[in-house]
Structure formats: C-alpha cells, structure tokens
Image (tube, rainbow, N blue to C red; front, side, top):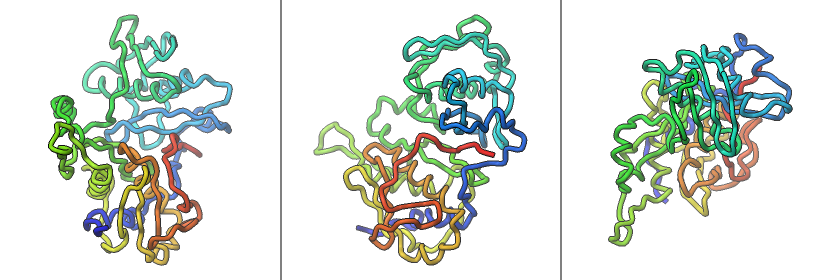
Length: 326
C-alpha cells in the first residue's frame, strides 16, 4: 500500500493540535433547560444555521412527546442554541397533519420572504425527514400552498447547486460528489458540506459506458478535502507526515492505520480526539461502499486510545451527533 499524500497524512493529528473538543456539548447558558435538557433517552435532530450552513443538533425530548410535533416546536420556539442562527424564529405553526410518510403543515411568519426562504425551507425539510418514516413534506403559508411533495435532497449544503443540476444526467461527473464533515470554528460541532471533488478521476469499466470510481479513491479524496477545509469552516495547520501510514477498504470497512507514535505523542490529549475521530468516520461512511471505519495503530488493533474513544472494533456513525447538553 502506498503512503498517503502529505495532505491526508496531516489530517488526523492536526485536529488534535488545533484543540478539537472531546465533548459534543456547547455553552447553553442562553438556552432554556426546559426546551433542550430533558432527562430522557428520546431524541430528535433539529436543523439550525451555523457559519452559514445547515447544521443538525441532537435535542433530548420527553419520552411521552410525539417526535414530529416536538421537533417542530423546538424549531419554532424562538430559542436558539448558542452559536447558531434560526431563520424560523418568528414562525408560528398553525396546523399539522401526518398521513403515512407525509407531513403537511401550515405556518405563519416571514420565513419564506427574501434571501432566507431557501434556508427556512431546508430547515423544515431536513428536520422532518430525519423523523422516523417521513419522506415527504407539504408546506402552506397562511393557508396558501407554498411547496408540495418536497423530498430530502441527496446532498446537504451543496456548494455549487447550479453545477449539480447540470451534472445530474452525467454519470462521470455525478460520481465526483462527496459530503465532508468539517469541524466548525469552535471545533465542537460537525458541519456536513457537499462538494464536487476536483481530485477524483472517473473512468469507464471495461471500455463500457458504466462509469466507476472505487470507494478507496473517493475515501482518499475525501480525506484530502477534509484537510484543506471549506473556506471559513475550521482552521487547520500542518504536522508530521508520518502519522497515517495507510488507508484501504476491506468488505465495507475503511481501515486507517496510524503510526504508533500517535499514542505516545498524544497520550495526554484525551479531551481533543473525539471530534477528529467522528469527523473521519462520518466523512468516510458517507461514501457508498463504506459502512464502518477501523483504526489501527502500527497495524495492530488497540482498545482505548483516550479515556472516551475505543478503537478496538470498527466504528459506524451514530444517527445522533452534535448533541446539546448543559
């Protein structure tokens, strides 16, 4: 296996040097405990705006509360988590109807006026389609139809939607799209951003019209994009180019081999590693053909590399991330 390019090798450790948080929590002093902190195992994903991008946060709700109405009540409550924005702050829910896999709602307010209309619609659409068994959304504004049969887009926070529309019918271009989970400026939250990679090279299989890009090639490209950052999201530096020895895909598992010096050099950085691991896991498993990520150290499986992170077994992404707590 060839050694990874310099940019990829930098990735994993650089998160740690830039102070990645070992906790998913944020300062919620300005957020009501009654809204976000309920002692319960039931959760919902609610989409707010962070650094200009649609970003999910995990909120706890009471076990007796219906999932869909609870998610909408949080979205329209007017209370926004610290560091986030909400285009729906002044929105009121007039009616709500659930029929099979479709949610129909009538709302009032000025959310769908001007430049913020697209973000407002996406906040509602992504929040509802993350609820169990919901795939379509109908939106009325003050009794008048606004959008019907909305379905969740394939890519979230697509950086160039116009080009994507042109590429949808071009398989050799469509296979270059990736979703990268970048840390935000505070390195406490992950922001999914979808891009068209300028690194991936597509090719035809056996001189046929079938276009194929190996999952391993996409994974390598994704890690390079994760290192480079996405404009104003995050700030990454440079570090020793010998920390990641290799990357390969085996039976749906991305195997990332770290140099053994990682354990020695960063043994006292336990609180910083969690966001880096989650970023890599979510980015790689967003690629078709990769379901889990197995981290090795010097080619060997280890247990806990920090107080919170066990890498002995392959890691798959949890639905619930960016968790809000006290």
